Length: 232
Image (cartoon, rainbow, N blue to C red):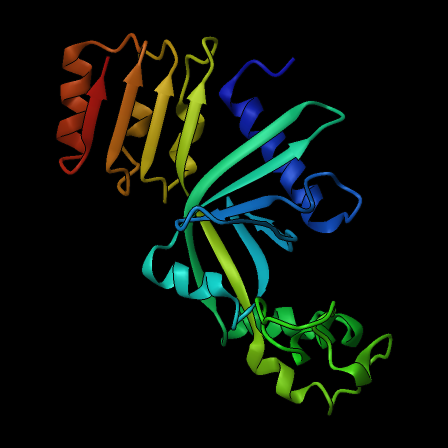
């Protein structure tokens, strides 16, 4: 039975680790929403330490959206097991650098040919895959793919917001390792807030049903002066 925060985080981490490497996993293709209220299905390429990696065309509209508002929501769902994982975080696009280079080199030529075509959202008069006619069903050579590299980028998402809505969670010690967490929604009978002292990036805490005393909340506020706390 998964009845502790540690077990919940471990289970979510296990599922996302598998989803990144197993194309048959139901969580391999989550829905990613951006600040313009647009959403799309993307392929999870890597998961590590609550960081997600996706691949994208640098010409895609979401690249400009994220430049102005980097907030994203990511929804993973396993219908067979009735398990949903909702994450919110900050995304950044990297077109160059070691992460993007390694991701590009790790792809097959057949997969990389997608970046040879017109950019996402291009309007056509007839149904089209977006690929140049010469590469429909054809694997391009390394030389033919050289122009495609400029259109490839990675989208990296760091978890910054977490919801814990479980009446059985009383110990938040496992959160102490989430150093980049900025917003925490806690609807649980937690009494000891001291494990949160080390979350120096935390700027907003919303408490509902917590058993922490006013003195405990004041102590947390003293440890994290920039933290805004809403308790009800």
